[in-house]
Length: 166
Image (cartoon, rainbow, N blue to C red; front, top):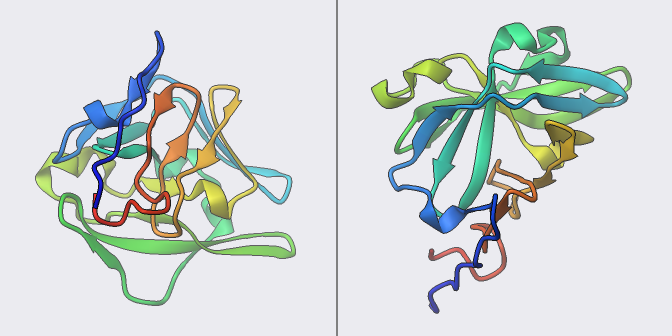
């Protein structure tokens, strides 16, 4: 498998190839928002992001800043991240629309990720829009990954065709 060729970041950008492995958790001062079916379901200035080599940032929202009445715990078993622990999923239901497994959380994360205990992350591709400040984020390629791509990050990104073995 050919090694990916990291894009060169412009001033003010970050290369996902400079992100660490194992991943790092950091608080973010930006305003994060999620919109689905015309409703702002989450908005915070108290979020976190997880940075991992080859992945765009994954943003986590405190439950107090989410309209939790729109979320339903997904009944099937969780997945497991070697770095963060067991995740459980949520369906998002707003009015007459539903998005299956639109969000996930860690009820008992590993010690390095304890600050995001109970926080939720949203798949950008399973909601109508996600924003970092006023910029609308694009979903990370691939059905499994939950990163948000903005103009501040450059790839290539895990999840693109041919990236399975990265």
